[in-house]
Image (cartoon, rainbow, N blue to C red; front, side, top):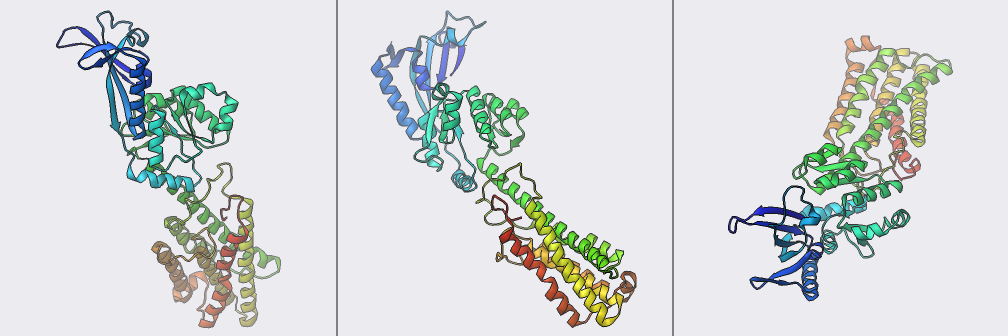
Length: 458
């Protein structure tokens, strides 16, 4: 409720004007304005008014009750609501339409599919909140709609057991919003809380992620929030979740790709040394791979479009580390396959040609092509997905650039002297491509056999 004490310009006398929730306002009214004059309010009047209030609320209207009283006896100094808001004359009901934005219904569906549970904590009437929730697809049969009074009657254990069935809390007070946040956190949930008013500030500060409304939000709520929603649009929050998941996927893809390729380079050198062979690459060749040929594709993975199922997955446990045991298995497995393929080619060409530079050029090129095949296997977290090869032109250009640089190093005479390479024949390329294509198969098969406990490919 809210009241203002004014001096009427017409009568010159002090008057109190009050607005608030109709059910609470009626408790403080002793009279009603009816037919142009005041009369005592009856229980029948109150029942009729509450029925009208409920009818408005069922049509998703936000309803305010209006009342007034003569206030010559009130002194503005030290005035309290308890002293002022009594003996009121009920003046009428006002129904206001505050429709949800069109995109909210789609956003709620996205949240449901993504394992994100949306709750409404509002100061509005329970019936209004329920009607709006039905409109946007948030409320389903079996969901509980409770009021702040109902919440006060529950002890902590009862609320803890019922919290997953509660969809709407109406007529909620600031301290009750905090209690809801704390109960959800006790269940281990990551809680995001949005709001615009001072009364939302305690709950927003308590939540794991507090979001203040940037347009209608007060300075207080913006100060305690962790982020500010610039357009006050719920759909923007859902889009941010989608983008956040996409960024995390890109980190996983790039990390998996780079560490796997680096493991292959290390194991290739290590294996050759352990079996008493010469180094399969010179240091300058290794340096070029790390700075150019595998660096450009890794950067291009950063602009890869997200997987179609990104908002059909359950939320990731924030306690899980990005580099898991399964990812380490993949890194070692890929590195081992890459090393075995490279060393076999190196030994075969060293034996058949007797030229160390020739064998090194083949091994060097094989490693580069392993990485080019691997990056295409790293585009998606799902196995053998039919991706449009041109949906990420940055990756196509990065791979083409890496292969182009490799060709220059192999075939330009002055670069041959710098990198100690020789020109390769078509047959050499066929052998290299046949062996290095195993990099793509290893990446794809790992998505089937190496998955974490949430079903996300590592």
